[in-house]
Image 1 (cartoon, rainbow, N blue to C red):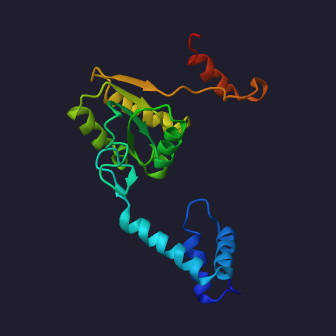
Image 2 (image 1 turned 30 degrees about the vertical axis):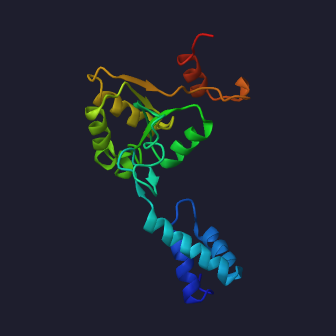
Image 3 (image 1 turned 90 degrees about the vertical axis):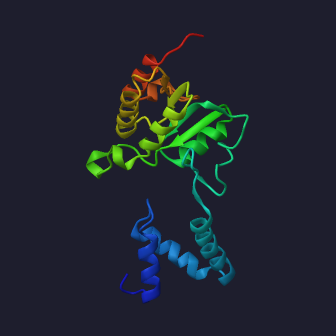
Length: 199
């Protein structure tokens, strides 16, 4: 970084703050921006400012949106009695892309990770509790990630609502379509057998 002019050093430092971007990738991105046309750089800068100015969280599901409520929560054809709980907006987007879910969502904006300082108070659980209380909610689908943090988060939510009388389900986990069993890890095979269903 010593060989870079100060404005380039500053740009690299800012880009390196993005998740998954190390110093080398940040330097490559900064060099790309240097080679880009002034118009392209202005469009990038304007889009960054526009996202911060126009996007906020939906008051119902907490998904980033320009309109409030978001297009999903505002759609009368969606089943508001079914809530799919996800960790992040990109998980919501992935489920929506499948086109098979017609309920609503709740975005937690994270998962339990005590070692990283993320506890229940850092998740949007209070809003979820309020939605369930205001009801009527018939089913909570826990679609947190199938890892240690996602499992802990799902377990916490199950405990929160265990006496509610509401149906609480967990997304199935197992062998991916097109997968070959001989290449699948033991935990995935175990979950596949645990969550098997009739045909």
